[in-house]
Length: 237
Image 1 (cartoon, one colour):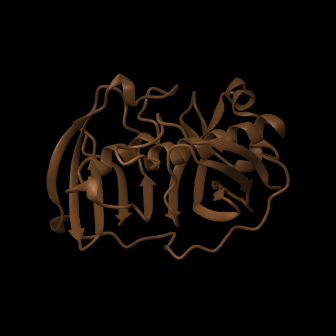
Image 2 (cartoon, rainbow, N blue to C red):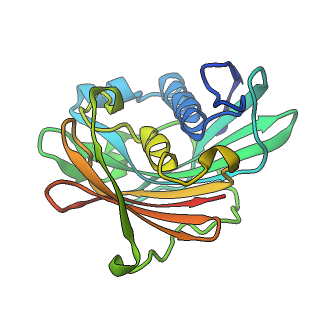
Image 3 (cartoon, rainbow, N blue to C red):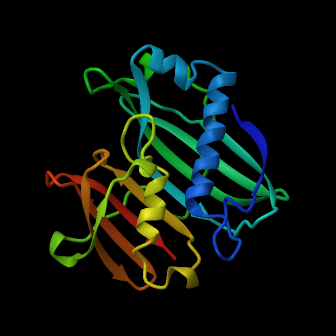
């Protein structure tokens, strides 16, 4: 069941070139997903009252056209067939009837008190009846470089401004962080991402950021202070 809202891009959402930031794009789409869950319960608040909630496991985004300050767009979202420990959701943003971006996400349902993954059917029918996913020209799974191929590029502390209600870096904030370590980022146009969220980045922790560049493709790995991998990502320009 597709759920659609009309959104206007404003100057708080864009970069120095008046282009919609990838973080803002993802945040706006996820907000529409939350609105769908309110319209077709259970909502995120309903789940939280039961001690559970969805956390993002993987996001694959394909950007087909740049959106700018002042653009009015339609944001769509729908659940796709989900089973076991994975809840799958699609998002789409359209401008003048043309697809501007597609986002495919995989979520996990977490019992917060026990920090234990639950089967997604324990949340009930989220977002109404599922619909078919779209086809993307980016792989949903990526073979990442070997550890020795990466170079350390930075240490990155997790600040209060990064966090969400769970006390961890919000999943949308990762895009800002990773883009900051792409050389001459202001001259590049992002065409796609693939991020696997492995473990949370808690407030006060410090990540070590590793990168490997292969032409216009950048592979990232972030590692927490306890040596656990935090995320693995690919940015396509």
